Length: 173
Image 1 (tube, rainbow, N blue to C red):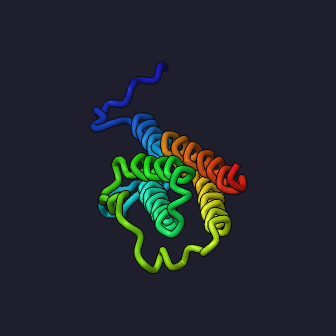
Image 2: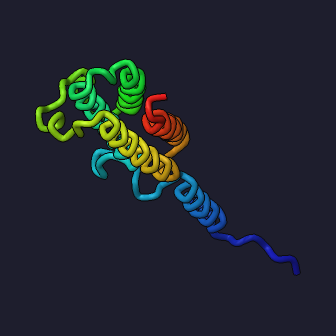
């Protein structure tokens, strides 16, 4: 005797449909990059946004260091102004799309910052070279933790910072 289909009508989706849609939802959630750092207003800024803001702030602080050295050693202006201009350009690039504006790049150094600059120009240059090198190293480490375009920007700024450190340590040649 052949088996007949069930006599009762099924209401709602079948079990296979439910299982397939549940599996699809799990796959979509797993592939969405949801690492718990979505950057929504409830969660606060994303890791990339925090890195971008910090990089902009670091560049502004480095530019202020250049300003302090320039104020204390005006004879170094020809050598330092192009490097400072690149540091300010890095700050502007990092600030694109950040939530809050940073202080103006032309802000004059505070008297305490100028007082902290070594009296000898070679020591002041060595201090800038060290600051550039340390910042380049931090950026090189941070670029592993952020997405594509920001990672490329960090890598570019880190490479420029390493070049600046080399030029600053070049004993005036």
